[in-house]
Image (tube, rainbow, N blue to C red; front, side, top):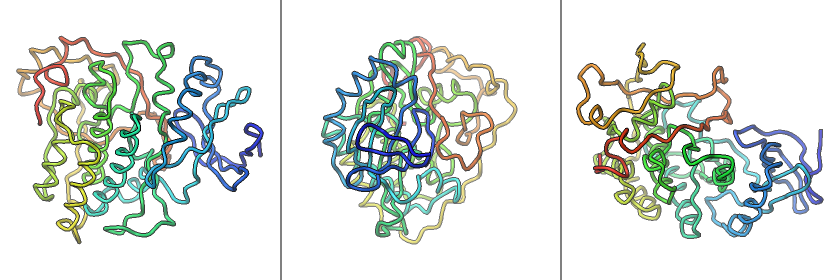
Length: 358
């Protein structure tokens, strides 16, 4: 059933649901649009509405070929909505669920497109804060690129920042999607551009391997691995690509590439990847381990992190769905979480400690 959004837009049918709201196929004065209607509890939060209006200029001015453009922000009664470009295609999560792993050339081409989008955003002072496959759209009407990849566009700029208002989230909480959270966010530092680079490198790793580098098990276990563990190598990719990955997954934010550098480096690597098949990587298993139970996972002490017992070594796990019973094809599943920020003495290394490139 159609519904009016403000005075200029009509929402006709639901395209998908996410953690912050519902995306509708809509119509505006200039033709079809996508309308992201935020949850009612968000729309009734006056502090959030004020921040929504403050972000208007920045979001409307972010104009780049690899960014899903925001045309309007609507505040009307109980409705709080972003009016965006309508992309004829699918999201990257849907493609991952269908193919599991992408050919390296296609994976790198998609990551380079997203790095271009981040470069434009960071230059405008905007940090995305929630880069993940669900927020990467593939334009099926665009020209095919390297490895047969469709143009990739980054969407949902500003959503994580809007939700993360001081009144809605205390200083001891973390907002984000656990598999893609940079260590400095987990340690309670303010998110800067480097968190997007870390998240994008995690996405690229997932495109190549079929699982995220630190995912699996309870969200608390995932957060701990981001801070205390190094990434497991991927066999079969050129060393140049692996070095780029570990640099962008560095625990210390200053060690990571900038978005412009990452995009350029990725495109330089594409000739090395031409014709490569998807990697043949063993799927990680998730053994019955009390550390990975449904009970929250306590962060390790500094001593435990520096000197883990041999039997505590954990095999790499695959990506985890944070919604019990979520259908495999639900590419808009709610994967946000709010977690306690561990105390500084609970974590070893990371953005505040003896961090180094893994």
